[in-house]
Image (cartoon, rainbow over all chains, first blue to last red; front, side, top):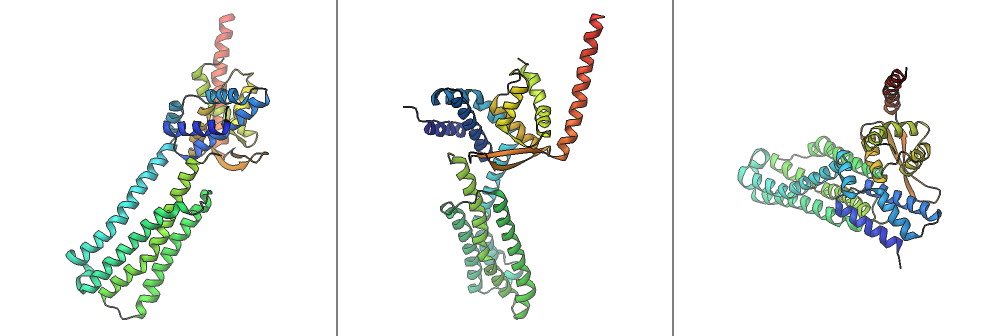
Length: 218
Length: 110
């Protein structure tokens, strides 16, 4: 017994395997397939023949993939991969860099740190990275915002909050206390820790939305 | 049937001209071209979308997600200002080609 929904799901898997992995083109192609099947069924074909005809009319998958690559759509997928690599590398390298500064290089504010401040600096950097990576990987469990505009707005608000917090800390909070340079360094690092959650959430959420759109059968 | 090369060359001007009549979506564009050409211009369905995306990246058209009357998602395309300018250029160029061809044909029969 022919199952149209299952056949479309298999077609989608074949498109993914052929390399059409960016969500928008695949979703558009699937919508087109649905429209054509609907028209063919209305004209009298049974679902199986309508599906086969519609898939045939869609054209060869490698050729479609090549055309999308030429159109620069695949480039965005590659850009996203590069972003992910930088995100992971940044999150993993931050504690290493802070640790190297605190314990070995001791430049600037790190030069006067006591051993407990060195450990605190490293702990702050590690916590920030842990929160960013943790949020990045658990975001798939949260409901996904499908609208890119809303996701961009959320990401923009994260950046605004980050800048506002930095300005407030630098101009409003730090001058009130008679911190040594070493204490300012430690306080600054801990001040950035909550943003590990926000940055990890923003990155993870965007990634979860991409994956969800790529694998959902409408 | 029109040759593959001519179909490819005419896709962008045809899309722009169709969108000059108002926003539309991929499937409707393919059906409209088929209807207007008496089935002589048949786009390979899947090939239309890379062209639409390329035109969108170039700023000729813009896209928005909407819904069909049955509730299914649809991506609607509409002309942008640069798209209207591009139509004028396409018409000028295709008219020139047409007039040269027509002139040559006329000369052969005079």
